[in-house]
Length: 370
Image (tube, rainbow, N blue to C red; front, side, top):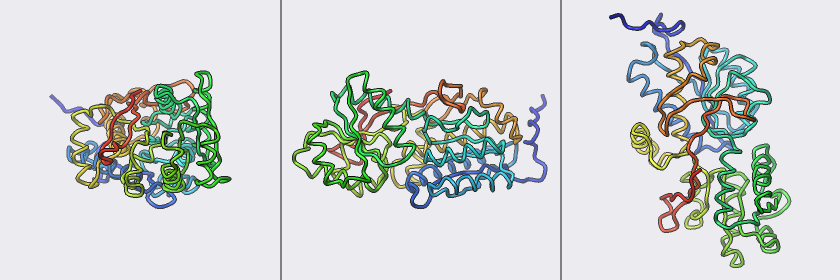
């Protein structure tokens, strides 16, 4: 019986690698720790692919570019990577950066599997070139809003900074909570100091404060101020964007890092593949891998599957998004068209609301699952 022939573009001709461009924030002002986890997941998956023969005998290779949370830098990286001949793009953590990358990928006809950015409007117009693993912000943040309501919070303050991502998050919370009896009170942290915020929280009788601000600052200063104010001993501090997920949060805040609920995209139990990946990544990173690392691994798992079925032809790869069926670290991955989302979307990855355990801040406890 003859072995199946590789699709066009996958045949080994000169032993050259199949290249995937990887967009990752690795320097400030990017969220460096998130970038490190994302890259670790991407790289481990590439090693696993190559350990079983690569793409029809051709090794898979990452061509990494640091976006540093800069949309213009990301767009320029997409142009460069496209000219280098990469088969597809992977990665990115910051939503506004991923949006710039997606726009360039769409314009150039370059498949882009976005790993970790959640902004609903990842592209202004529907596109066939972009797919996404992370859940849309509206899906995850509505889950967080359900958690707030279930915990009895109806007067919710949000500390915000200017950003399309933060503005979108505040709008999602306000629109979802208002018809359910919740009130959202916004505070622009450009106009108010963290210490003055405490007075505002008391005056407005807020029972919860959500951090829609950058990490480490001003998020860390806000937490220290609120946790140090006896008048706010009962207020819940939350961080739907996931700042407490990473070890740096616990290092900077100590005991104050605990009991701050946030969103993460993991199941209660990882798949057997996920459990193996977790073990390897924990040893590699020297800390527990975040959900971002699993997103990175799953990105390459999907792209490798597409490359094996379609070859490195960009148009054929993009056409195959609706045909993807891959067992990822967090469950079966398939893409579909979702109302209001202009890209091919995994609907949905598992969503949890978790917090660091006050009794043991290096452990997480699940509070709510969406």
